[in-house]
Image (cartoon, rainbow, N blue to C red; front, side):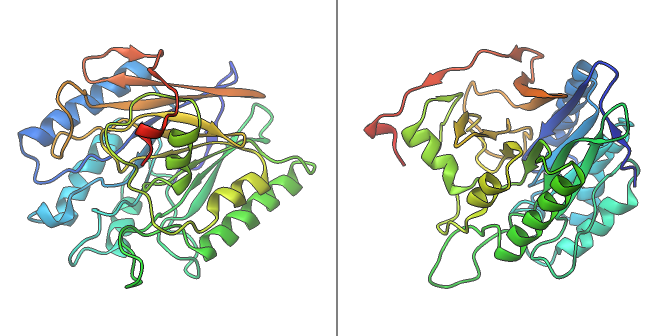
Length: 312
């Protein structure tokens, strides 16, 4: 694994977020997804690629392990460091997270770590981005947001569990202590949106689109509160809802959707596939935009004002 992430000499560090590839069996739609990814990477030349879950549609794959390898080969062949977290469709049926994390770790360029065994989920880890002096200039957290609730009284999607929250708090405190008591600027990546993604759309000004309801867990486990308390977290990035790409600020943290990338899954007419691009700047707020399949760079987004009719 290559964990030597560094800000460039101009103090920037660029991340391309691909989400919801839903790769199946390498058919024509998967080839379109591959072409889109290669085009975005050629245009943006990022320092890191992040796949925020549902890399494959495991129940639709003839051989999920092979399909996962095919999807990862696109980022591996770029020569750019990369990481992937799990979504709810990656590990359905007989496909396990343990199998797929081992596949990730076999591929060149990954910075992914399997994470502590005592923590819920697989692939919970933090990566440091060094400044020109070798000090930690930013931290990138990657969490497994699970698949589906295993509690009969709570239907729907899983949530970030207490052991993961405690792990995050410990990591954040360790980084803060080594940074002279100052929280380290951080970004957080996971698949399933937090309940707060619904809150910002219902009550705050947002920028971008919400073409489907926020499919968040029905349980709020308190991860957002932990991020607020830890300090330093500038933004979070998820996927899961393929026709949402909005972003909004809540309690000092920018909550953002990626832009769905894969063609082998549902979308919306005239709503192009694409990727979100994030540019970190040392000592400054980060910026973000969308790169669409047609190559267009979207920097000005539809402004949403909350109203009662849009809530849900």
